[in-house]
Image (cartoon, rainbow, N blue to C red; front, top):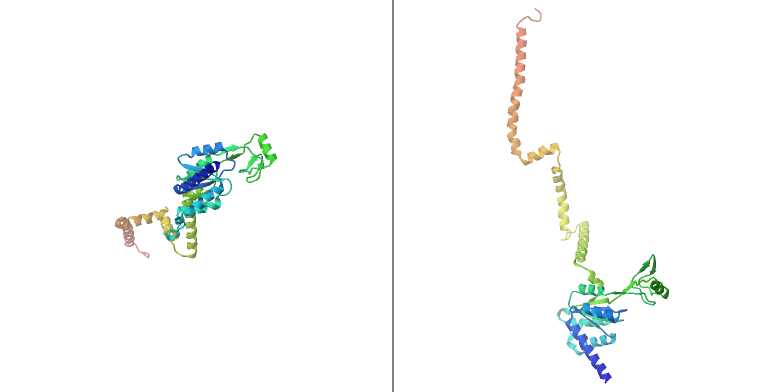
Length: 297
């Protein structure tokens, strides 16, 4: 009887994991080291309605996935264009089912679920033999990330009443519609992609400008470089100094200078007539003096 119950439980577990893999296109492979039952319950409650947490033995999870593929030969076929179905891509999960791991299935945004998992970490004291997940500094560095905690370090931290570590579900791999990648990819935002893309465009434009090969990336810079000499001349014309003011005024309204030219000529005519009269008067005075006595009289 217990064996039948065990067999029934395994059969139900296989059906459950296959159903979750079929229903949810995205999931996390998470590490559950140092996560207690109470903390796991809190994680399940916080993810309720948005994600499903499934734990189990690695052998059972691998067997369920392999059995699902073997019992459905149609899943082995490739779609047009060489793309595999989502069910066929599930086979890629097998190499990552190692250690104390589980699945977190979701249809929501992966970044949101990741943040919820990180928010459900609890502080814990250092234990001898544990792997340090972070640096521990107290005036001097006691433990480095990745080092195994020794008995002396654990005793010292407990005496100081320091709980330096925090444990929770650690995301190891991300499965998203047939693709598997590291969780660091979730930190990439649209701003990051935009920044990286612009850096690449600038590099391409620099190379094209240097070798004189026009491309879409370098064309705006080529146009600007061709416009710069004209812009310098225009800038010089815009600078203000006395001579430039007259030139700019003439360029702005040449007709005003043409209309002012006769006025200047007429104003200069009386001034020219006055010296002529003075010269005539002097000549008449000289002639009057000559009418008197001559030089040898």
